[in-house]
Image (cartoon, rainbow, N blue to C red; front, side, top):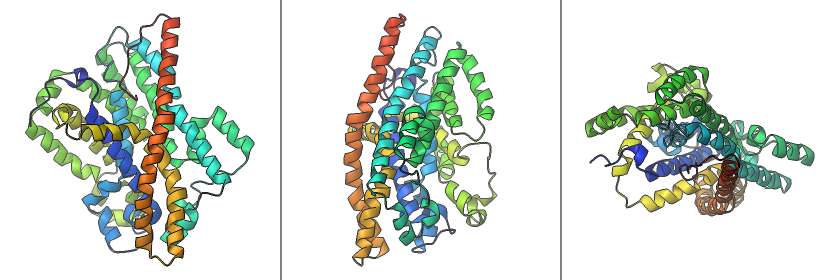
Length: 408
C-alpha cells in the first residue's frame, strides 16, 4: 500500500469519502429497519427478542451493519471536513466564500427537507403509515410509538413547512433532526472561516468550540474542520502515511466504532454487564466513543483514499450521490411500504422472520428507485439553485465565487 501522490487539499474531489457517506446511509437504513422489526438486536434486552441471536448481534462486530449512531457521527465529521478543506489554507478570499456558502446552505438542504415534509404529510392523509401496527407485532411498540404522530391539520403543516422546516421537519420524518443540526453546524463552520482569517487561529477557535458545543453533533463538524487543517500540515502525511501507524489507528478505532450507543440508552442493565460497561461514558462528547471512532476512520481515509483501487469508484460515487436522498426518505418508506408488506405477509400466515426478510427484500429496490428519483428531481436542482443564487450574489457584489466540492 502506497500513499497518494497528492495531498488531500490538492487531490480534488475525493470519491472514497462519497463511498463512506453512502455506506453510512445504508447503515442508518438497517438501523431503523432493525429498530422496527428486530429491536432487541439494536436496543438490547429492554425489547422483546425473536431469537437469541439478537443479543449476540449488538455484542459483536456485526453491529457495524446497522450502527446508526456511528453513521451519524461519520456524517458530521465528513461535513466539517468537506465544507472546509478547500478554504482551510486560504487567507484572502475565504471570508467572502464563507458568506456565500452561508447563503447557499439552507437552499441546498431545504429542497429535500420540504419534499420529505410534503411526502410524509400526504402519506399521513392517505393512511399510508402502518409503522405502529407493525411495531405491535414485532415488539418495537415502545420505539415506534408517536414517531410519526404529527396530526393532519393543513394550516399547521403549511405554517411549519413555510416558516420553520428545519426545526420542525423531524416531526414528519424523524431523521431530519440531523439536517437541522447540519444546517446550524454548517453556519458554525462558515462562521469560523469568517472570523478567523489565519488557519492557526481557526484551529484554536475550534478547540474553544468543542466544549461550547457540549453534547451536540456539531462537535463532529468542528472535528472535521480540525482534520481539514491538519491534513494541510506536513506531519499529517508523514505520520499517517506510514502503513503501520494507520493500521494501528484503525485497530484502535474498530472497538470504538462498535460501541453499543443505543443499548446504553435503552437497556442500561445490559450495557452495564457488557465489555463496554466499564468504559467512561464521555457524556460531554456527542455520540460518545462512536464520534472518536468516526474521526479516526475519516482521518485515515482522507490520507489513504487517493491510493485505494479505483475498480469500485463508479459504484461508490453513485452511492454517495444518492446518500442524502436515501437518508432523507428511508424512514418514510420503512414506515409505509415496508410496514404494509410485513403486515400483509403476517396476515397470510408467514412467520416473523419470513415476513420481515421478504419485506426488506421488497423494500431495498423500491428505496433505491425512490432515492434515485429524489436525487435527480430534488437534490440536483437544489444544488443548482443554491449555486445560481450564490453566483448572482457574487456578481451583484463583485465577489469571485469558487466551486466547492460536489454536493457540499
